[in-house]
Length: 115
Length: 110
Image (cartoon, rainbow over all chains, first blue to last red):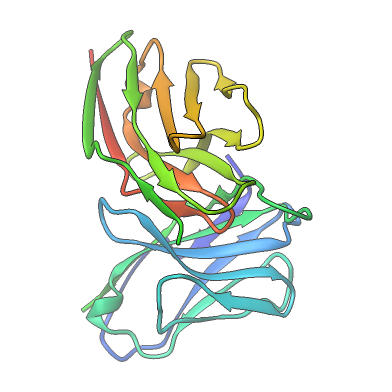
């Protein structure tokens, strides 16, 4: 399995709390991604980064924000969690060579429940 | 817009038999990649196989092979000699920011 880590694996939290989901990779990959996946459903890209200080929103609108201060670290933050944010969040990374596309390596995911 | 369609929500196969999972896609790009990812229950998503659109030859990885029909925009996955460990959700995806299909849940019976 790839060296990409997510913490926490499970989080149950009350409405209105601020949360940060951590994602780290030790492969030196330039590109990193956040996906949201509801149970039994497809993944939707919510954020991506092609390098340090570069972040973009994905195809699915999300109230979360991300930062990329270090190559290996790509945290996702929700300022005020709501029940509609309940989902699984998957982080991924890829090498980032010029041109199209590299294989993405996925973390184990964080399953978030907002009460 | 790019789309990926998996029309089989669930499939089942007997151990040691062969099963084919379907995927169709749409893109206006001429150069792209297609992927099959496997997501076992409560485990990490892993790459099964990838196909570069400009390559005519179908990709093969051990028991996994694809039937890539570029003109028909079809990208099916064939699993030969199915094993119990193949049971998982299988997602077809299209580059470059991956567009995923809705997935096919594969059950493998002994």
